[in-house]
Length: 564
Image 1 (cartoon, rainbow, N blue to C red):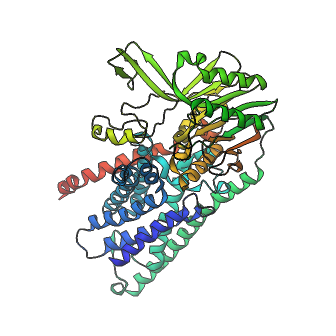
Image 2: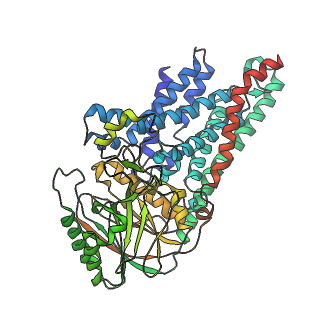
Image 3: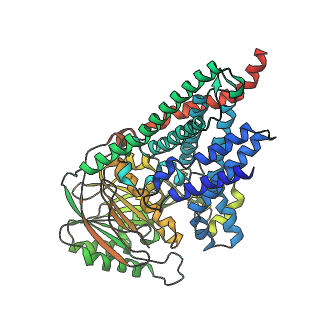
């Protein structure tokens, strides 16, 4: 078992080394699962008892270490506002839950592998894994941070074809490459010779049959080598060609991104709502010019909950429009805290105030402000489990006190069902992706499909401290640029703010924990990519196959007994 443990640990290390924010190491993903697959195969071929349990434990070891090493910053964030025990308990959700679902995919794969042909078993692993990624993007405990396709975020030169497949195409690329490499390994090592499902030792086969088997084996090795090389080299070649020859249509728009550097924990310095707004305006004026069309301010830049129907009368609105008197063509896109009041429960997230006998919703909002009474609101919809929305509220109500300590709300923020864009006075459409939402490719693509010409990411990455979390979050925005061929203007309260072009290159970025303002002439784009139009189309057949795989496992024993 010691050898299998070391192999499982090796896979964990390789996966971690391939993951952002490490640069140029992402191709390691194409081989990272090989040691684990070898370990699991050796367990299955051994005389060990309780093989299923050992397969689960080996897989779990790999994925728990990989997840923890890559997103350790979750604990760092939680520990900043609560004690170590509470932070550790809440960290189990991102650390352990994702690792458990990954492990379950491999465990189910090994179950199928015992009962069917090799190619069907490999197809089942791909289907189970991609179904896990899909589940982890949509259920109440959603956390698609570790989707395999995200791992190539630092190497846009290799994944320009994401404009057709999105990140699920990257996940498929990784899984197939590892499985082909694993099958090639078995052939080269001569681990098994399969003839009608039976395994024969070479010593038991006469020379003629042995010679024929060697020819088959040699032929199989050759074709596996060709398949593996083609699977890796062809997508890279296509991507490099696209990357090298890609030219943006010249359609400039002057955009200013502001990073006010407000300590979200208030440990070093605090600002009143007025002081914070004045700081945003002061920074904006440093780079703003007469042709500036957008000022992008970060998430919750406008402090203090304001009722949306009364927003025009708020000091924040009046001060911002006064600032825009000097920039008559500009629109401010900024984060804000807003709420709505209802006479009856109009939304599932609405809460009831016994004191006022009214229903109300609070929102993490992006608002577009221009030199007119016109206002546009967008409500963040991909809410962080626990912090912004209680997952499975009835089942997990006992965790309310812990979530509240982290600034969350036990009733949950309100949201909107469908994405929408914000528009400038001149009609330029913008995707308002608030923080966590920028890792949802399909959500951003739906907004772009409605006419958005660039993507604005507004976030407050200061919660994570100076960890790799802020770097990973920036890198993932590069994927949205490639998928939709749109510039990304990213405003982060405490870094890293950036401009990303349509190829996924970071053109400008700020330094962590510094006041900053940057401007860029970005090229607007109205063309719709294949991915923008069809989003996550590639996942659908694998969802169906995973269901069939589960049904096969459940029915196998029953059907087998009938045959007997």
